Amino acid sequence: MLFCIFAKKSMAQTALAELGEFKLIERLTNSFSCKNESTILGVGDDCAIVSASPDKDFVITTDLLVEGIHFDLMYCPLKHLGYKAVMVNLSDVYAMNAKPKQITVSIAVSAKFSVEALEQLYEGIALACENHSVDLIGGDTTSSVTGMTISITAIGEVAKNKAVKRSTAKSTDLICVSGDLGGAYLGLQILEREKLVFTKTGTKSPKLDGYDYILEKQLKPEARKDIIERLAKYNIHPTAMIDISDGLSSELMHICKQSNTGCKVYTDKIPVNEQTAKVANEFSIDPITCALNGGEDYELLFTVDINDFHKISMVSDVCIIGNIAPQAEGYMLITPQGSKIELTAQGWNGIK
Ligand code: ADP
Ligand code: MG
Image (cartoon, rainbow, N blue to C red; front, side, top):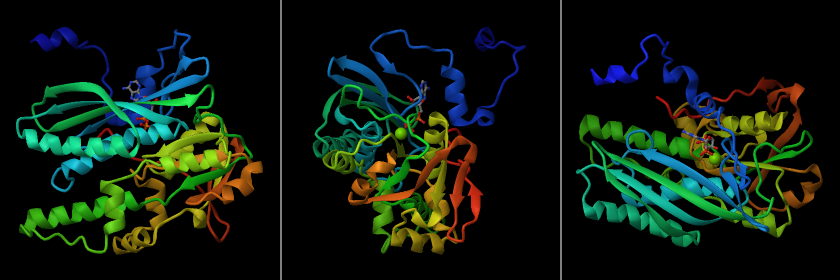
């Protein structure tokens, strides 16, 4: 009966699914205000911003990966998982236009994992640290009843007041995206399909040939350090930026809502890889739907001043997909025939 001490019986209870992830975070955090002078930006962006020195700011982000929710060890090798767990965080650091410098790694593991298995996880973490010049500086280790949970915190550095937020897009800016979209989602569909075949038939030779690109997008995503370096080389300072972890529509709406703007995105400008399009057809899904609503692409979505049009056109692996618009114009998708469809943010919802 100890539980009764904590439960207020008279209080109406709201199911988590009723609110969804974003509204839940808002409800839990909106009564907090930042009191310390060194806190420049709190909850609501890819990273928080903290003043480090008169000429430098830190950006800080944290992400939690839970077995059975974010990864399935039936098809995700532990080394890949370690690599991906770091990338998910570094992607948020790059999305602030910052350089990642340190990570902490905390794990909760059940007895089903051997020391050697955890060493594989850390091989992936080490490779990620090496590729992105990041130091592992600490963490925490504990046991769990079932499965594995990994929480990584990343710290990055950026010149004073140069961190790029979600909230600073202007109504005449261009909307840009790196790489291509929808691949990671379809990679997951292939893995889930083959898992089903295995569990039903026991077939141990999954059909993965010809899916290399999308499988890599799902299992070994790469945070876009190269894009941040290229933007700096061309002297382009994005006006707003976010990383695409939940699908293009959801992320674009974060930028628009936080910047009080609308947007126009041209469907034929959204970058989709050839293999992504082919596999989308195999599953009878529109590839653009995968790009708009599929998760885990870890590309960068950013806005630039219209006067940077020529400069941004020269940056490789970046596409201009539309423009920011006045708020009254809403969030619009424009088809090649010129029809307007209102953009909705389905995204990925972490709360099941
Ligand atoms: P991202 O997808 O970029 O990792 P999230 O959607 O996870 O961002 O989080 C959005 C914002 O909410 C971030 O600023 C994050 O730090 C904050 N946030 C998420 N969960 C919590 C929580 N439980 N308590 C406080 N802040 C949170
Ligand atoms: Mg993010």
